[in-house]
Image 1 (cartoon, rainbow, N blue to C red):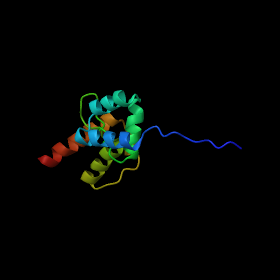
Image 2 (image 1 turned 30 degrees about the horizontal axis):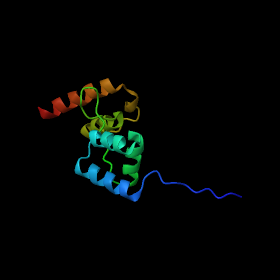
Image 3 (image 1 turned 180 degrees about the vertical axis):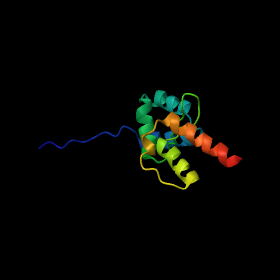
Length: 110
């Protein structure tokens, strides 16, 4: 049986340089620069930085730039404000839940 030896994708020097550069400036531009410098895909660079425990994912935002809020979080806010548990409230549309949450907040501020 033939023994297969693997060549690592990244040398220790490459990894150290990558981590140092990324920690100095943790941006997409840095990842793109590293990908170009090491002739790797940005996905490969991100995966390596994740394995090294230094990658910082960009927060998810909507098209308008607002943070993404799950329906379950809105439902929890509504239930906390009203002090009741509504088992099927999550089946409502997100838009309707946002309107309801805003109305409850307005009433509570009065």
